[in-house]
Image 1 (cartoon, rainbow, N blue to C red):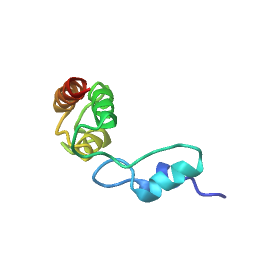
Image 2: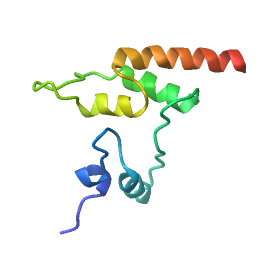
Image 3: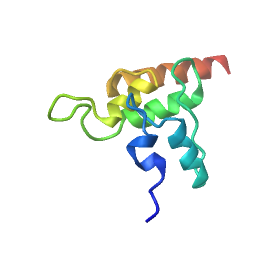
Length: 100
């Protein structure tokens, strides 16, 4: 039986959140166009991700108090919580509009 793509298995996931290079490579083989996280700066892609993920339903921590994949992904993009993600997204967007 064929193995599932790396992006769906732990082999393609970064333990600190998001996908690792192998996961992005396997997703690209399936026609997806994923790029590495932008951890800092005023990149519009970062603002969009933080706004989108800051509004995601679900907890930031599981019942054991461990961070969920959602919180790990937010940390990978430079936010410490969903509220922080929303705040940073608004600030980045505001700075980008002011400089345009």
